[in-house]
Image 1 (cartoon, rainbow, N blue to C red):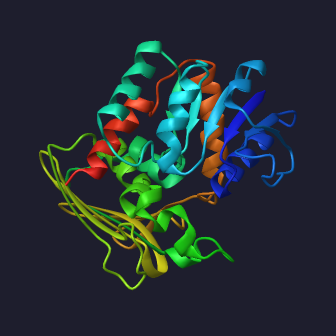
Image 2 (image 1 turned 180 degrees about the vertical axis):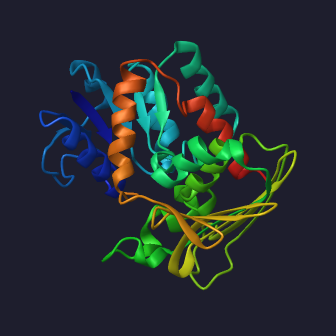
Length: 305
C-alpha cells in the first residue's frame, strides 16, 4: 500500500506504527510545509499538495492540528482518494464545513473519522453482549487527566490542546467519550452543555465540559477535564438492580464491584484494530462506519450548548 499522511505529530506516529504492523511493505509519504521540516524515519517527503495525483495513493491520513482540517480536507477532496481523518473532524461547525461534508457524500468518497475507543474490548463488549439486556436508569461518564503530563519534555501551553485558536479544548480533544456514548445509545432527544476554562492551567482552550444527554428512559451525564492529577476514564451504567462500572484504562468491567470482564489488550492496541477495520471494511468493502457525515453529527452534539 501507498499512504499519504498530512501532519507527522504524535498521533500520526501511532497510525504509522499500526500500518507497519499490518503491511511490512507499506510506503508512507508525508506532505510537509517546508523542505526544512524534520525528517521522519520511513517517511518520504513531498512538499506540494499538487503532487498527490502523481503517486496513486490508496488513502490519506489527515492528522494535522484540528484547526487545519477543513483546509486540508477541502484540498484532498479534489483527488477523490479515501480519507482517514483524525478526530475531531473540525474545530467548529459552520456553513462552510457543512457544505464540505455534503460534497464528500455527493461524490461518494470513502471517509472514516478516527474513533478508536469503539475498538476497545470493554466498550465493544458492552455494545455487543450486554446492552440489549439492560434496563438503564442512568449513565455517567468521566474522563479526566493532567494536560501537562500528556507530552513529556514539551511545554503543554504550546500544544494545540491548550489553545482555543488552534482548535484545542476538551470538548474536541476528548470527543471520544461523546462518540462512544453516541455509538452505544444513539442520538439523544435533548442535550445541555456547560464549558469553562477557569482552572489553574491558565489556558485559552476549554478545560472543563459537562454534558447532559437525555434519552427516552434515562439521562447520560458526561464530564471531561484537562486538570485531574491522576487519570480516570470510566463509564457507569445504573440499572434497577445493578451498578456496572467500565474502567477504560484497565479495560475491565465490574458488576456491583465484582470483576465481570477483563481484557489484556489496552487502548494502544485499538489503533491497530482500527486501522485493520479501515483497510478491510471501509477501503475494500466500502462499509460506512463513522463517515464524515456521521462524525459531523457527533461534532454538532459536542460543540452545541
